[in-house]
Image (cartoon, rainbow, N blue to C red; front, side, top):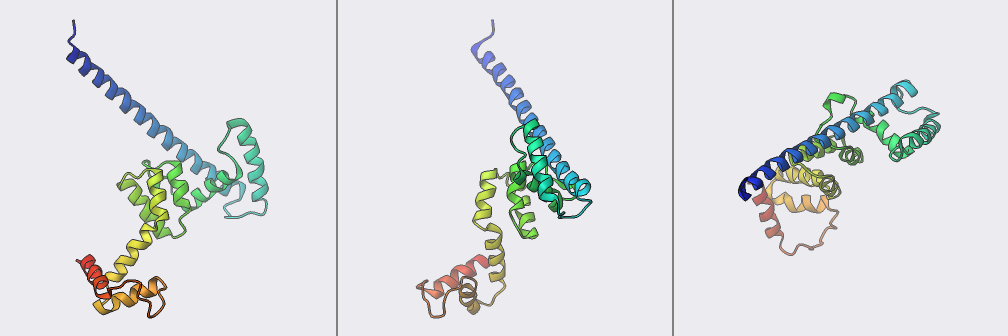
Length: 194
């Protein structure tokens, strides 16, 4: 007869197998759906619009496609989502460059970032730091890319210019002393350079 510890070990091994299988299935489904949405964007751009970014009949086409796809496949195919799929293809024209670690929701959030260099930064950070979609959205809304870029710019300034630079970047009116100790502020900025 198996011992309680033997049963527990067996249970843990089986539990691990099932958990890994579920996670693998989720990743496979996610990758397939991201690829499908990319393909839908490609079809809309290349076939329906003959490779043009915009076509005069595009809105009517998307409305008709939305109605038909929603009837057959359910939610997720409204005109806004089809526009996002089209934008997805335009912004990520190389399918093999898509990151399998990112979900469709990650990509939808990334599509909202206007600057390509900022979008690339958030994409890499989301993968490397394993950001959830909620964390990615938080970092985008907190302007992490812009804050880090600003910090890098400040590191290149001479010591005396840090306060002037801060005032210029943050639209602080001349003579406004909202940071009581300018020298302390400059010391903090210098510490960040190290």
